[in-house]
Amino acid sequence: MLILERQNAILDILNKEKAVSINNLSDRFSISAASIRRDLEKMEQQGLVKRTYGGAILVEGLNVEIPLVVREIEQKDAKYKIAREAARFLEDQDTIFMDASTTTREMTNFMEGVNNLTVVTNGIRAMTDMALLENVTVYGISGKLRKRSLSMVGNQAEACVTDYWASKLFFSCTGLWMSHGAMDYSDAEAELRKKMMSACQKTILLCDHTKFDRPAFYKICPFSRINILITDQKLGPQWESLLIQNGVELIYPPE
Image 1 (cartoon, rainbow, N blue to C red):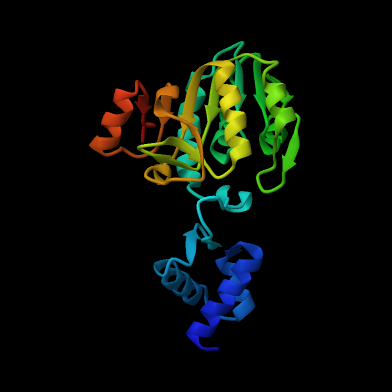
Image 2: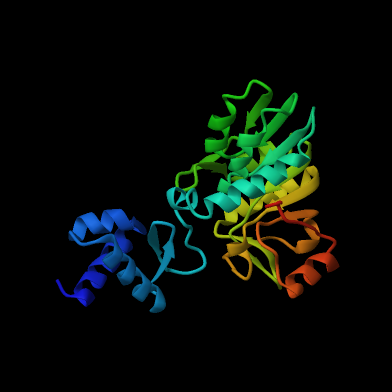
């Protein structure tokens, strides 16, 4: 098979499956992983795909969500560091909101030492993780299941949130755009986060460096609604100035 034929075949697979791994493609075409990486690099240069850790996703626009299985391995080390720093804000007797993002889910690794922590979340994976923690009481937000993110959303979920009050909201987003603030692929997830913001004292955004200067389909909130932003790499002066102007406390995890 010629290189161009193989790349067209990869694109056909992505049109059907939306996301693929390098190992999977290597097996399908019986060629080396290095050759597949070169194909994906060329296709990314042409604007056809977006490479991810260990694979690629189809580029279809700002409203296309990266599958959960891909997001869970993207920037894994950065998410771990950010979540570890975010966990410093957990206090004994706290009641907190957590969204269904893969970054906030990493916080479950650092909850064991907090006494009588109550967590309200729409993230099914996080609920499962916290089921093993004796010191954490978990309230799951009911609603419609989003299968791609394993989260509960919709009118029922939004109504459920109004029954609670939390000291803090820990959340993430798809991207940050200077003129629009925090943004997401899903309008349903964004609207639920807005409800959480209205029912808490402090909002803490967990966001790795790849999210900056990256727009998405739906606005979550302006920067003025964010109290603390934790990211893994030092930002440029323009970003730091913008966040300071909006009263956002910027935190970098220690090395």
